[in-house]
Image (cartoon, rainbow, N blue to C red; front, side, top):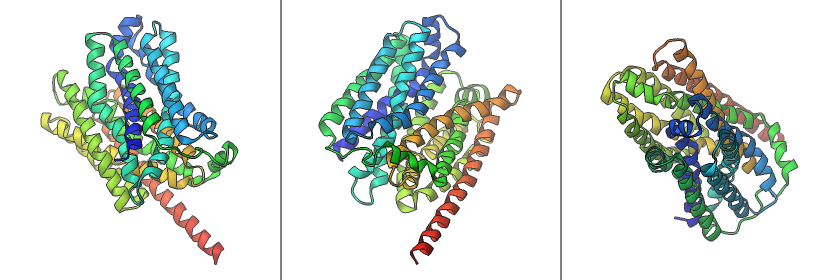
Length: 391
């Protein structure tokens, strides 16, 4: 395996850990800073806001540098910001440091996905991108449970110190393993932003937001689904999260295989159809103690069948400005996270069972299927127009 891909995977591990570990240590942070749980939830929102803003901003600024230097700069920023989070002693300081931690997230994954494709052998681009995302999926299996354990039993600060240590490993990996690469954006930032005029690109970004929002509608309420609906004790939730993480690891590579055997956009279509079926099925099996755990693994698998194909789909839609388009897709993932959690919470707040979140997720995934057909139609129309013009 190309060592440059390993360096990207280490960076992905650190980013995945810092994004999700805060959810596991939220009560500990709230107690330590003497704030409420809803106030502590602002730290999650601040990180997501940083991702949305930082993806296009830092990708555009970093375009004048060689890609390997841009990645090094982004991971250095990430490491410093997360280390600051570990030493924050007030609500305001932690809020600011979490926002700063989120800024390089989208740009790193966006630029990293394009770089991974270039490091791969011809025809193996999907597998290379999946290798980078393996770091993100393994973070949910190893990093997040480990950080949560230390956060509960020692101090919440330790979780972010661990993230900082992973960041240092990623910096060293990029420094010594990443080959010399050309500028991230050889045409310049002004030329890059012209790609935003393309309808196809915006439709794929909308697809990511709505389609992956279906997964987050389920994932955001997985804990009460397992305890209140299935009747498991709270201790089982941690094991269920690991099961979901193992599913994500599995699905990541299945998605890469689908993207290689079909076109990326058709791989996305297959994954979304399976997600609708799985989420609807879960509304029935969630009441069974074994069934809910089986579905936790399966839904995690299906959800991450999407990650590599949809990233490749947006790269294909942003020809000439691939890194900007790829980075914007990471913003879309986070908007999917926020919208899925919010929309799924509406029926729950209205008094419906936690299984209603699955139906909301199935609805969002169904909307994603419709958008996928629109993208396919636009591509066929553009291809036909190109052939006609050449004729």
